[in-house]
Length: 352
Image (cartoon, rainbow, N blue to C red; front, side, top):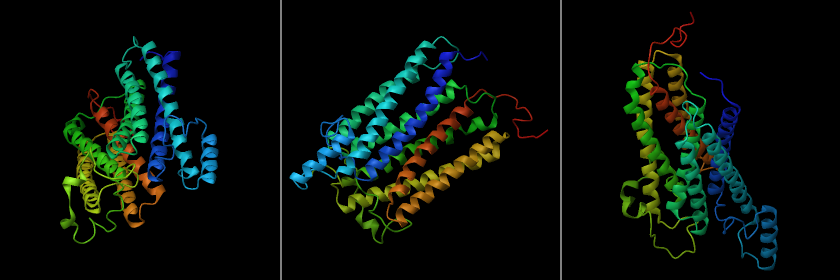
């Protein structure tokens, strides 16, 4: 393997920074959404015409003193604008990554299409962020914005793995046979994340307050026609804050999210079991335990959301663990796609 050039080392450093920054953007986005601060700044890209959040706070306080209640609480401008600052910085970093990738395009195995796609994706994310505000938290836009953020993070993780040439060894041949079930589990996780975003954007997280499914009689309250209207909601509110669906529709969304969690759990447990049966290397056995640990943590956070009525920190953690689980599955599929060969004793976990 050739020694990395200076520009390649810079590229690797920016990729790591971008992954950390994207994690921060996702966390701040979840905090903004779940603390009902999504319309803390009703305009875009500034906040009441100000790019400096301190000036926006002064503007809101002054206006509310002269015209009480005319604007939302001043403290809600902070998470919204801080989220925008982080997201803008991430966009700049991704552009730098694309530029460095272009400089290194003639180097062996240097990805170029993925960085360029990330530039397009982050631009589209910016547009979705604008629409989220200007369209008053329209649920479909909010859900797409969440999915776009998760996709950005996951692709940055994948890009980082590629620029570091990870994994650098030959894999278990038998583990490669798990690609179909791993892909099915990945699809289930993506759909479950979308359901989670739909649950949050329609304020359906507290529609069911009992376990394991919902309150007694939930079967009679299901309303799929209203629950999954993605455009053209009929309502008489100025925006979609706090939701516009009736309780039956919200119950339906929540119940489907819980059944989705059951499907994801079954598929991931099956994948973990098959990895442990087939894997000969410590590397893949450890991968199985990581997946199992993330699944257990996510289930615990989901149950805690129900038991403790969706506390903000638990809800944000539930959102973040979901994207970590998604990225981990993508990395697993990448690892099993590496050309297989004969494992050394060390790769097989043999101390000798």
